[in-house]
Length: 181
Image 1 (cartoon, one colour):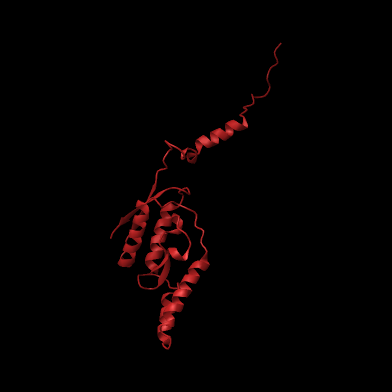
Image 2 (image 1 turned 180 degrees about the horizontal axis):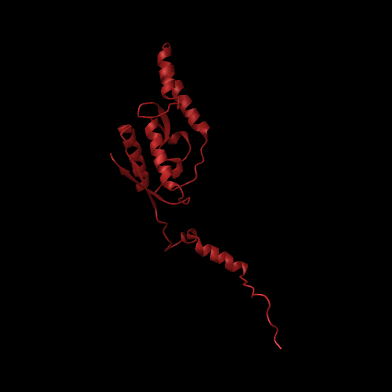
């Protein structure tokens, strides 16, 4: 006489099958080799704001558009060393104030403009070191990747990009779109 089951049948799945299923569900598994699946790029729009410096916005937009066309923009976690921008800022202030040796008022004005402590509510309030190739888009945190930019413009563009990349998986290609210039 056959034994009657009192428990539900065990659903056994081998360890290997779980690994394979996990790889198949992962879109990065298929990205290598011929016929690889393409990950759809995230389109990020940066918009000109009337409080921004037109010149600095154009410069930043042109750099981002060039990097986008070259396919060099990918969403990456930001690994920033604040000492790099501190050194860049300090070196610039030393060079500029050294040229105005007897003029303390001019030295103070330069130090204030480049201090990074401004509220940056509108263009012209202060200057920030700007990463040409944004860190959040795969740029290096190095002095060679820095230039001076209006603080308000730099911070606004950076926050526009960060807001649109929130929730996007790391490694996703990014395409830049520019409005208003």
